[in-house]
Image (cartoon, rainbow, N blue to C red; front, side, top):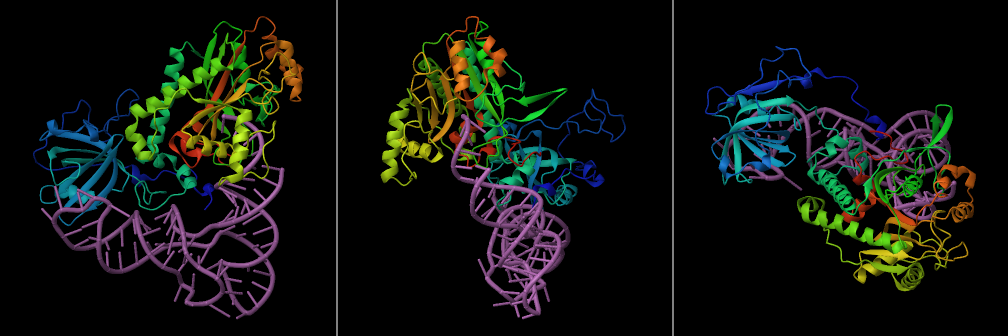
Length: 502
RNA sequence: GCCCCGAUAGUGUAGUGGCCUAUCAUACGGCCCUGUCGAGGCCGUGACCCGGAUUCGAAUUCCGGUCGGGGCGCCA
């Protein structure tokens, strides 16, 4: 079943958009008076007014807002018709909105029209139900609404391309093809509510620490940081590239006097990776800070930032965490710092007698690969460390802008570091090179041509202060924090090796 | 870039040459049911990715194609 099969609907279906509203005759409920004409189709639509055919009131309460005080009152709830349980002489309608679910109980004896209608409405239709709220022990929620009026605002087609609440599995691919339906599932929506909290907490923390929020361009001229493939495209008469990160711009900002900047950045990487941990378009919290003594100043900010994020999610999103089935503890500060040299030693030792094994031991200068990262994660988690910095890397596997440990390229080590969480890299950061001549050497070190970096290098020639920073993958944070099996779960509309739609 | 795997109703699956005019669940349609809450009962509709080959016979084996998933690398 190819995803291509699920293309946008070919054409309108007149039968699904028809407006249906059935009000019970007589009865106790008085529909709230409407400031708007309610005769269907009697007015021309105006962009300034609510839909002329609209109901008097779409909603007076969200499902989870209803409480004892509402007992006996007329209320209107609105949402998607999750389920209809039709009995011979009564019917239960389950309505889901962004806050939870409500049950409407329809008695055939009292409102035969509504009972008949209940059996006809497709699941996942958008409905608005007005009726009397009744506290009841018979209802699982402790209350139910006895409808006087059920409005079908927009009927759903059937069958659904994927079940929202069905007790059958749905492949991630199918879910992503139908993301709007997928996100109707509370456990999926929860991921994005947590994502919102992560971003909110990060922004709040960084602003509080004096970081200025900026936005740099995603469209770049020829220069590339190297290390990854970039997307090339035609920019009028020139060729241009999609930014692999805002790295160079962030650094240029260090020469402006802003001192500290951050950006919620997009990374575009044209790498044909086939993993559950990579995206071709990802989002990052990127920051850069000037006038630092060394990379430890950067790590301190990261510690505080991660603490702020984890704490915010822990304190504000327990409901969503329960839906996702994740526990997010408040981090223990300070985070462990382990040097690269100690890390590979630990990895090699654990590889000899652990469950995970490396083909050959790591030697100084090797990058720490995926399996080695996991081994280290296992070992350090057992020692009580979820978060840990890997510091004092050799220069070789790091990008050109990372500052060598000493004052020149003669150093074996550098001032770059990674922050890992439970065996996966969340971010990499460093003190950057701020001396223009050394930076040129750095560029040459990785086989690039300094003449391709003119604009960037120029900003270093007029008093660039010592600085450092990092880029933190937001999807990585969510994936690791929540234990998601696939990074695509953390993006509404992921772009990967093959997915360009929706 | 290297390597592995998969494609069966709307959805998720069973099926390793004849017992397959293809299993089960869920969805969908119909009927029954006054307290469901994973509602239940009965009935029904609905599928083997495309092309070629082997064979008396192919969902099943082989070849090619298309589409997709994943591991490593790269990285966040």
